[in-house]
Image (cartoon, rainbow, N blue to C red; front, side, top):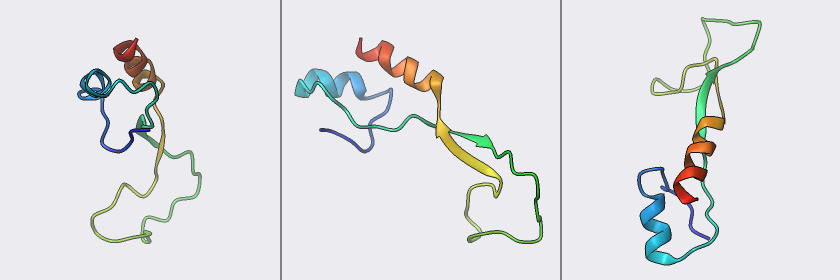
Length: 71
């Protein structure tokens, strides 16, 4: 099962070239966390990082868009 690096820009070509019927991929978006308490003086990680109070979730619009591409 193909996976890793698959995007809306290459999924159609991948399917046509390989004939695969299943694909493993993420459709993540970043959203603001619902966290109530925020300590802006402390962070978990290095300088190059995602915003401290952001979370990664599955994007419904991305999933719908990918389904439209693959039919």
